[in-house]
Length: 502
Image (cartoon, rainbow, N blue to C red; front, top):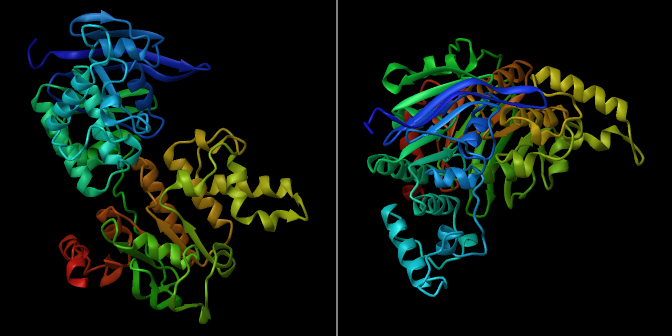
């Protein structure tokens, strides 16, 4: 097989659920030794396509060819036998089993008598991890003790243990810190050099341009384009994904910046919040940049009363306040959209309207009874105002895309009519279209006079959306920069200044 001959080809594949077509005559292929990025907004059909490749879904129409032979992949076992393995965003490992046991689960090496050859299990697991430059892992360690990045490498070793020719990676960096992202990208390049074909699904365009050889874009269940990565730029990819030109992912609006609404002086909480002082004005977006562990989220939790300050002062609208609980923060006009919407922001099995009313349920109640009509009216208005795409306000919020889930979390806290809105990673894990929509919502809020404190690990987002930037390291504010002063170089230098601060 030549280098240009696809190892796996999907031709004219279609899939429908309950009469709704989610894939429409889609064609896609992967070559050995290439990284083929699969892009599209949430709901574009990416997940359905990779589940068809993984054998979880059977297509309603079309053909699948693997290594020159037409095949039917009716189960994950069929896909594995064909040389296709998948590393999902939600890692599928058994936490109580060891690293080696997880890698070879279902196909343990055996002795001549048929017993599991534990010596071979350990030695082969060790060899696979060494190939991935993961020599620090003990193969006898239980998976439950590992970090997300380490578990991910175990998943990749597990795929290689079955001699995978194609590896599908679904949002592999969504939960990783930057150092682990760089290490994973190195592993992807190493696998490509060994001839493994990679299907790489990610919302993060810089990763796509750093890794991909080709890119395919889906939109509304249909194939839009397949291009060599050198033929497109970021603007063109965004336009292909959303079906319209986007002049900027960061639609910064000019808003009238008013009086100081929040003044913080000498705030302390343990080693993560140390002598923090800053001001925040009405109609302003104050960005906070910093590496993981710099104290950004800890500062947000302290301001919101989840981990109350041990010393320092907070002045809100000219009045000193001591914030000891989230309820008190809410009543004072402070709202907090957490970085992990799935665990901290939503109750996924519950309806959209219940999630939206959650932060103000006491205001919608008469005794033990909830005013359901008022709850439904306010939820309907919020869904319309923020552009939440859903069947109805009764739909479980867990069925929504990541971007729409994030809008529901924002809607929940906007119901409290906040003066100060803390947004912690407001666009993490959402597609480019939803990202631009959330940025537009932020612009509308500051025009209304809301003061926004925005924490983000994406430096372009901080630079693109902020009026001023605070840079944190080692629990301290290292530098305060105006929009004009906040260059990538200057912010980056301040972010790494924690050694000097210590």
